[in-house]
Amino acid sequence: MALISDPEEGDLVKGTGGIRKTRMRSSSKGKSGGFRVYYCDIAIKERLYLLVLYAKNIKEDLSSEEKKWCKVYIEKIKKELKI
Image 1 (cartoon, rainbow, N blue to C red):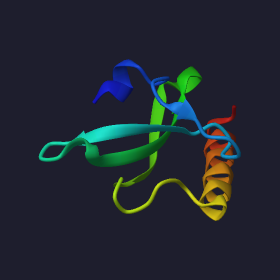
Image 2 (cartoon, rainbow, N blue to C red):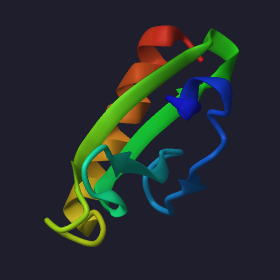
Image 3 (tube, one colour):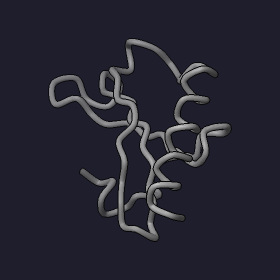
């Protein structure tokens, strides 16, 4: 997956504490029928966390409640990593 070689590929999502959003192709449907991938790259620790993955035809974006959950989760990860 390209995220490992270029973790800054995705766009930052506001209100999430630093997660990024990108698209991933489906092997059978191409990019338009693929997936949305939400992840957090913590470069200082060389870690990449996959947070949310869903088919693009399921929904467009994360809800505000899901964004809040991501922010809380990222804060917990950073606290545990002591950064």
